[in-house]
Image (tube, rainbow, N blue to C red; front, side):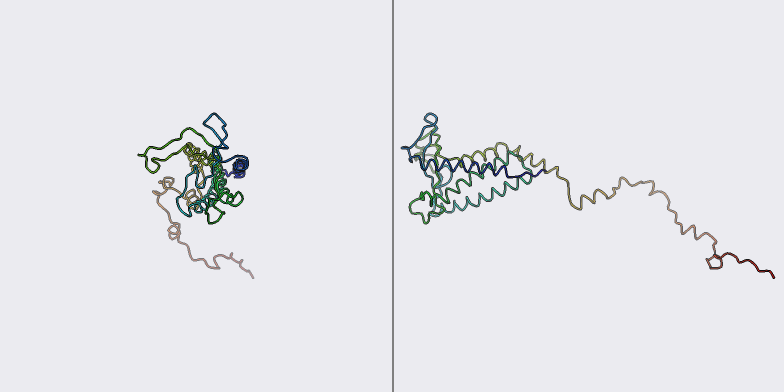
Length: 258
């Protein structure tokens, strides 16, 4: 496992956040909202269309009095969690593709958090009746892929009988969508490589070291077990040796002659 520096992945995140915020501010100051300021980019199906989104990605909303506040708080926690997970993956040596995808998701989360937190104060676009402009800012959407619009049939649950068109989104939404799709499409490759790298890690701990030095039964010489043991004490017991005394150790003194 080779640890990776997450700096370059956070650098991509910062670049995408700057791009997202730059486009949103340009749309806010230089385009008129709605169809009056719509700009066609490619034919009649790809357009710039300035709308304010009080809810989640692609215009979805939480139908509650404090739904917007809860959504903003959730985005803050999600932003911190994604950033921590990106650092964790980098330190574990995750594949670059997975880290690039996570950096895109993080950029999208941060981009929409900035809108929800500050736009109600600095751009004064909080919905009418909001208890506070903080955390109630509306997200600026502008990318309109106009491939379908009309009434949904009555038999469709929840949305039946209502008029809808393809959603209008922004660069932050696109980053989240592309990042999630990359992880889904290449999950076998991303997490398969991570699992393979983890399986190559050296085993650590007292069990591994003890297993490397302890003998195993198959290496014991069976012939040594069958050989009779001889006890040196038995051999010594058969000797007719006298007890050792100082006289027996000292050499004999020469005899004096007168």
